[in-house]
Length: 475
Image 1 (tube, rainbow, N blue to C red):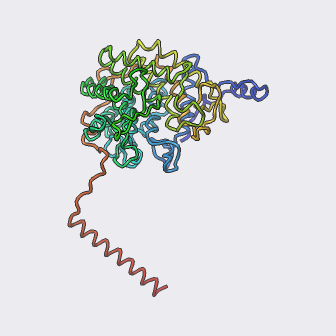
Image 2: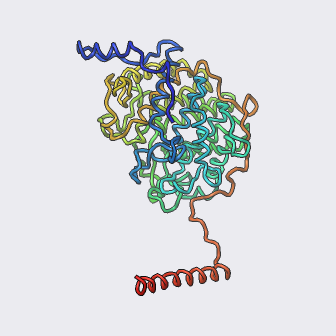
Image 3: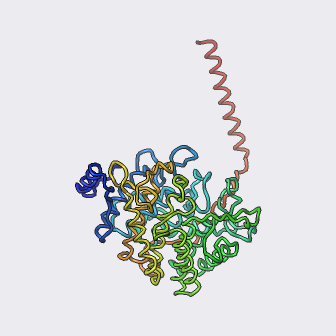
């Protein structure tokens, strides 16, 4: 599908600026402005249009909901989970701007990927299905409920029920074991590489979803499990007790004591968003305020030098970030923006940083034939082609879209709850007894199966014999 753009096309002034650059050698002018609300809206619309050009799931013969990939099958740069993250970015985009241009694309993609059991575990993606991958889709479904995104048709699973299904499958005792005293493993299928790793992001998303479901439904069970998950992360010291840096994970064969101390912004960001929901749900409990404050300060110290988003453990040298890492900045911008609504006292600290970072983001979006293609390296103020990181640029574009549109948070309603404006229908039992990662059991072979197999064998052999006779004697 080609999206019409009319007034979102590059204005003549941008062309004049590019011409001036060529003639006089001055620094290239930024295409985007975020000075006023109207500027932010217009910039967000153009960024959303350009981001959608990376998506082919709405084209004939392509798969709705996913970005081109996975790389293991040489189909593109992106794994299944990043499609779910993109859906969430556009759900927020609609919520913040009111622009419904892409809602049909998001509805189609979100519903296409629910899987046979409506719990975001499609069997054709089991080779790369982690608890975190499933969780990203679950968080986008939760966001649709919180943002009051248009409901699916009545005969399809609803947003809140989908989020509950993901949480229920991850809360199943079969997903938790005694290694490392609990915690979710990274991968869901037993046979997947990485099944022996218990990582922060899988458990942080589980915590995040529990906190959000508790606030939305006012069901204390979700909150109790969320707090236990937080306690587990703290107990294995994936959250540093001094610096509040959030580390990546550890292996079960080492009782999770071989902590991988790589720090990625989305680990800390998703915990901060969850802590803000717990703060809001508990009516402002001091322990959650303290946890939230420590996480926010750690995020800013580690990932926002000079108040500009910086992916510390890969961005120190260009070309070292994976396609996954290239999308983290945008999530953190979106999540921190929502934190300021759930814990309003944080707005004075957070919002100026997000604005400075968004300004740096748009200032480097000067690439490509349009003069507005975005790169990943915001701090330098100069466009760096996504080819440096060997990607097409979808993550980079999504980051800037999130950073800019999140500046509209002041004008957006706070996340809804079932008692306060929510319109999504839930199902507390969704996902119960769902797939736990074990290979599906084969049904016992019956007498009828054996008879059918025998008949099929006779037919195949008979056909083969006739072909041989025909080729030998009638050719």
